[in-house]
Length: 526
Image 1 (spheres, rainbow, N blue to C red):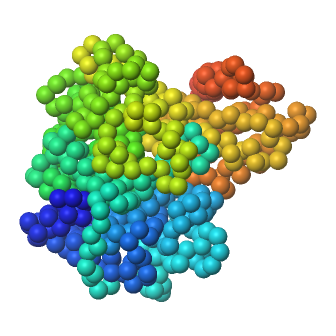
Image 2: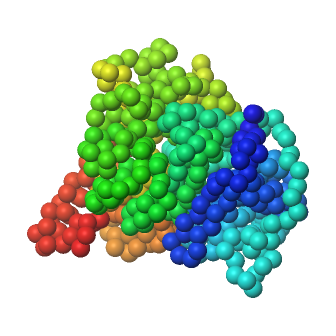
Image 3: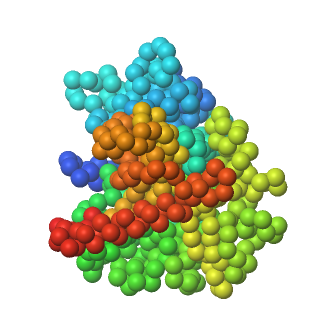
């Protein structure tokens, strides 16, 4: 078995009538696919892509929320050797134009009602040859997803190290970077994660997390496929729909991030659920007691494909920690000169793996980012600071790369700063994260106006409008504050730590004022 398509074919051949995918929409009727039926639809979607001129190596944009068509498109691209470029459906129009231009995509599979407008088809920059709308109405059959169902085509076999898909990830750069996964990378994610968390053929895996993120696709769907388990797919995470679907389908495993588990922690737990295991970004004993489910910690990033740090079912970790370095990887602290982690160490973690197998193949068309991502001796710089406990378990501390985590989404301050800085009247700007009870973190923009005597209220409105027009909603600053100058640490370096303290102090003062006026805090029930 060399790549992810081998796995798909093998599972369909083993038990073609066994249930593979159950779609549980919030509105309308659900649908189900056996392994054989899913493979047949993948081959037909691949035929539709080929009919539109898609060839091996071509990039196809996938711009959609969770739905069966998402998975059919992703696997359909893999079947004919195309590269599926997975996009966040919250992306703004400006971002979509960048994604199309940067990747040189030939077409897009999208949905109605999303915030951004995909680039128009036709000639010229940012143009695509074709567009398919998943949920197009009956009057628009030529552009609907059903029009992709063509005669099945033969599979295209490529080198397992050939590019298979891409995901854009936020970092310190002003534009997201396209992380390239080889075809072998996707298979590694399926094998490694399934073995690491102990998924079984009998498992029923509930997937409420977005497929356009590594956790939803590579840590949930692909491992379930490898284990031979059944996948129950939700359109998105919903605290009110999670338990009803889990109970009706008798789900036994679910992936989580801190945002989703925290939302469920505020609710009562049905006593008759069938869950035998969850995974979360941190292990908290009070969560295990509340949910009555063993929880394994996991940590990773898009560049790692599979979790690089993972809990173990038979081994307790220190509260707040994640687990231990997962098989297939080595880890060390930056600057240590060693090849492993030692109890008591604190610092930025670097990971060693094999490019194109256990680590991503590279950033697409970005040699500068590729060079910066790895040390001279080949270790990947994660940008995350960790602490190693006495038992060897590892705890996440903070992101040295400054990414803000808003509701499970990564926000690059540099990307937000680029948009704010372009607004007339802005002399300088720095964006930091502020803790938020509902979203985990939100962005706060500190702005230095060009004219100190001008109305900051008007400038604030212009900044907000520019951000809403050019950025996904979760990236838009929740607060815009004006300063005469940005605090500096050393020569020409913004003291972001001081700005974080200012943002936190202002949030505390606002909550105190709200309590004095009996105003509910953000994220709390009114």
